[in-house]
Length: 226
Image 1 (spheres, rainbow, N blue to C red):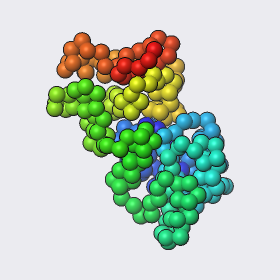
Image 2 (image 1 turned 135 degrees about the vertical axis):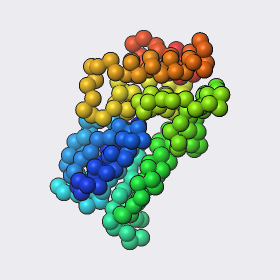
Image 3 (image 1 turned 90 degrees about the vertical axis):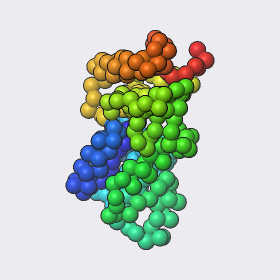
């Protein structure tokens, strides 16, 4: 999943970004509201962590523009404003969640996971397909009750495809949601990761093909109308 962190305090911005990357998220960052809106216009994000008090364009004004142009993006406001009236105002303006600084990173990540499940209309922390169980909270994949060792990118690909079961997902969409904006879109990195993922799954599933490709359209998991 791809997250945009909008925070003018660089120490907080870097701390959140590094923490989310350790959990396998693709992360971009912006230090002011103007840059944030530019990035939202160019890139596709699954969620945004948005500070209220930002240079150039205030966070609330950024939120208003996002809600007008891209209403499906999940937005979590992260602010030092702790009054109940501030929380209500932020939520009424269109935020999906609101956290007060100082905060605990594990709670932030858990709230983002909850928002992303809602983004994909998924209430449980676990996804399943046949004998494959994917736990989005533990970032772990099990087959026949045995944990499978996957890289962060392999896990991210499988998670995204399982969130989008019964849908063909284009190569461009996968890369847009799983790599940050500095990624070279012309590399064959995605194909390499998918081939590696398929090999690891085949150890347990044999010739059963879980991840399929429709040439010219993209990848999918499970049966979809073709």
